Length: 218
Image (cartoon, rainbow, N blue to C red):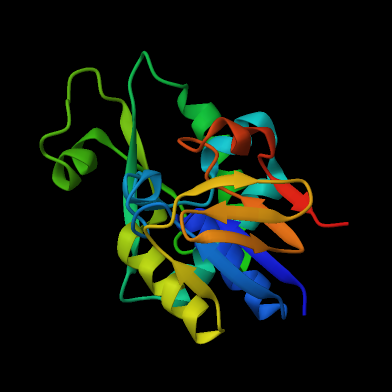
C-alpha cells in the first residue's frame, strides 16, 4: 500500500487525506498546531457555487463548485444551510442587464443541482427584505441563493471521516524538513513516504517552500 504524507490540517489537507484514504492509500497527516485553526477557520463561511468566476468564463470551475455545494448541503445538513443573498443594483454597480446574464447562466449551470432560482426585487421589496440597506438611488436587487457553513466544525467533521478510514492525524507536529526522496522530519524523528503533499506552504520553513506541492519517492 502506497504511503502518503499530508502536511497541513486545514480543510484542503483534510479533504485531500479523506479522498486518498477512500482510494486505498495509507495516509498520515501532520499539522503544526490544531486542526482547522489557521486560514480555514477564517473563511467567508460561504459554501458558494463560484458565481464570481463567470466573469472569467471559468464555466467548468463553476460547475464543479455547484456540484460540491449541493453535496455538502445534502450530506452535512447540520453544519450547512441554504443562504439567500441580495445583490443590490445602484448607478455605480454593475449594470442590471449584466447581472441578469450572470444570474441566468448561474441557474443554467446549476441545473438539477440548483437550490433556488434568482429573481428580481423592486426597491420596495428590497426594503421589506433588508430594511437597513441603503435605499438612496437603489434600482432594485437580485435575490439568489448559495450555501453557508460552519467552516471549522465542517473541517472537524471531515477529520472524523478520515480517522474512520484509518488516516493517522498528528497535531502539534510541525514539519521542519522534507526531501525529494520522500523523507519527512519532525521533532519526533524522520519518516519515509512514497508521496508527500504539502498544502500548508505559508508559514513553513524555507526548505519546505522549495517542495511546495508533491514529492515522489522514486
